[in-house]
Length: 209
Length: 209
DNA sequence: CATCAATCTTTACATTGTAAAGATAAAAGA
DNA sequence: TCTTTTATCTTTACAATGTAAAGATTGATG
Image (cartoon, rainbow over all chains, first blue to last red; front, side, top):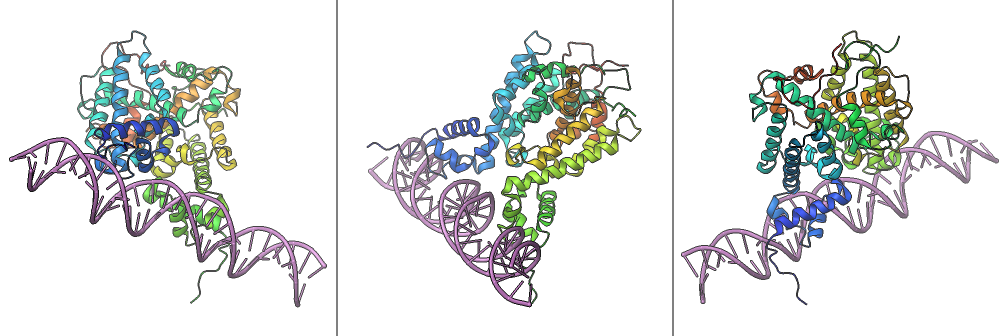
């Protein structure tokens, strides 16, 4: 009976892989320190030595998520299709629902952790470049750029969040959508003109008196 | 020594109030069944008799949140200022950060619960009316209306989520914003024109009237 | 080869959700 | 009015979790 060696040798990576496996399978709520340790085949407290505590582990995992998202967006930026980045962003959330959700669950993460801070910052650079800005940090941008960046990210992030939360299900049930979020995405970006001429798009049409 | 009576008499309401107090103070992660019971001054398992389990309690609390949001939006619809609803929505999230976050934390909620389903559905009616639709359910709307609704809610919800998650802090640190999210909101809605002419795929400005 | 430091396990404890059984009091029925 | 029933709340119990502390094992360092 050759039991596994006392020293795993590559536990850090193995733990992150085990965590992502559980995440894909059971969502963020399945990520307990002990369950991850079980999945990785080590003792309950082994991960803590590599990540400090649970929020440390989750933060490193979220950092990986941001890195992949950045890579996805970089790749999509080379696609000639005008709205390729939009669909790529949403597809990323669809393909990695647990990871995407985790990335923005600030109560379980520690954004001061270096890995996560760096990865998050890199995503800012990509986002700024996507609106034609040369700034690397939002703090160095003008107000118009900030508006564009905020608009883009809010719209996409809101869409993905609502989608993953199941809030768009009543919409997707509509026959016109055929259950495909990307249909909804296409009629949303760019926003369609108001049904009737009226005051500016966003502001509410006066609730038909 | 007159100890509290064995039967509270109005425990259901008291528990919800206690829960909201903890929510305001410590965020959604402070909402444990036992902590709520402590705050309400009853035994640890008393709340379970009224709400079934933790997700039941949180769902009823989230339902209250949706009701208040609906009321807020109804009130804002009567405000003559064109973008009053937008600012009202964000202000609601700012004033009730814990509650707003909880409302969309689907892993801790049970959307099949009647209270939550009803409250959530009511918010759809308000949202549909805000884009001039007369439908009460998204399932009965045409694709253009769905696009408008999705656009509005995604943009606002995304903005609020990023804001409450602290993701917009780098933006708000910019002197032009002066730390006020509503400044950012104003330059975001409607989105500003691109700084320079160039291939700017996403943030297409909605057709100016 | 001896020592050290890193890595992993064992043990321990407080906290949590929830099930089960018991206590209390209000309501209902005689 | 008195008994029975039912709703409400408490006590007890148990498995699971995060994390701290101490011990075991092994690779690295001198």
